[in-house]
Amino acid sequence: MNRKKVLVTGGSRGIGQAVVEQLKRENYEVFAPSHQEMDLSSSESIERFVQSYSKEGFDCIVNNAGINELNFVENVSEEALARTLAINLVAPILLIKSFVPQMKSRGYGKIVNIGSIWGIVSKGGRLTYSASKHGIHGVTKTLAVELAPYNILVNTVSPGFTLTELTRKNNSEEEISEICKEIPMNRMAEPKEIADAICYLISERNTYITGQMIAVDGGFTSR
Image (cartoon, rainbow, N blue to C red; front, top):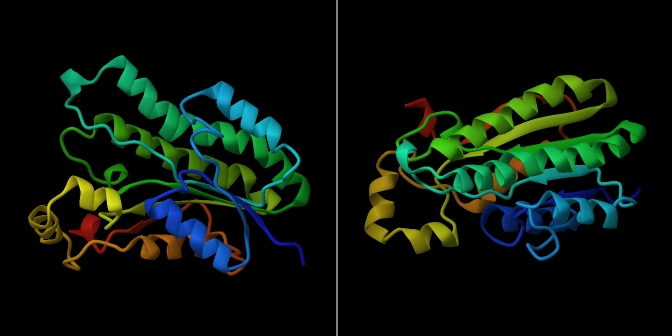
């Protein structure tokens, strides 16, 4: 049996790195391009990557890479808006558009788009990020319907607060402790816990779940 090939964006750290490591342990052939190999803010760079890997025929895609720039509405620049939407929303669409014909021809595919709790609830300063994450689930829902006849399953995983290196870098232990008080489980997720949900959805065990948004947030959005 041929190993399934998976494209993972943003696979160098945090949740993406946990996904890459778990998929490798499960014997998938993982492609996790660096920023130098594919700049998701550039449609030209994406096209070059697509051309380079046009014969790979990815079985699964995990659109994990994203940016989160905080600004209240009156301070949002056109450049920041365009950059966030390009990386978080347009790039996943372009990658799916490029590789889904091969999935259709094989009658098989799994796509997981990474959303966020801020695509379910929100707070001040999250305008561009929340817009992009609401949008990515719109992509999921549409493609779940459009691609279901071809046995291609499309889902969104929306992580909550996750204890990544970036979280530790941007927050003191006291700040992390305060955030944890807002989470019903009283702790942040470990990256592996988010990766578990993502890897299940692209595994052979998932044969019927499609079009769903699964929040892995310790109950945060259920308060």
